[in-house]
Image 1 (cartoon, one colour):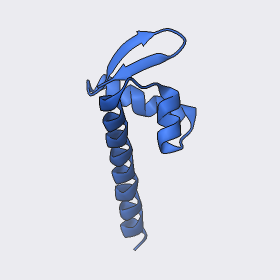
Image 2 (cartoon, helix red, strand yellow; image 1 turned 45 degrees about the vertical axis):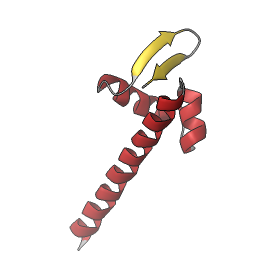
Image 3 (cartoon, helix red, strand yellow; image 1 turned 120 degrees about the horizontal axis):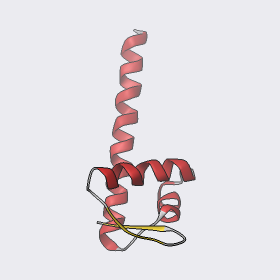
Image 4 (cartoon, one colour; image 1 turned 90 degrees about the horizontal axis):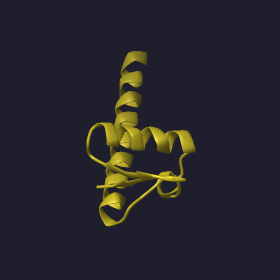
Length: 75
């Protein structure tokens, strides 16, 4: 029973993460984005937003445009 609940919780977490990543990609398709845009969109912390952006950049789903004061990402 406990394992079943843990499995359901993990599935829900994975699904929410995928949903968040897809929302970021959708926004990046419309305009260049940065960490603050992701925080505003998803209401997450700076580190969570950074993790999402890093994951998308490493997987090649987002391009890192330039590094000035803020790193800019685009689809």
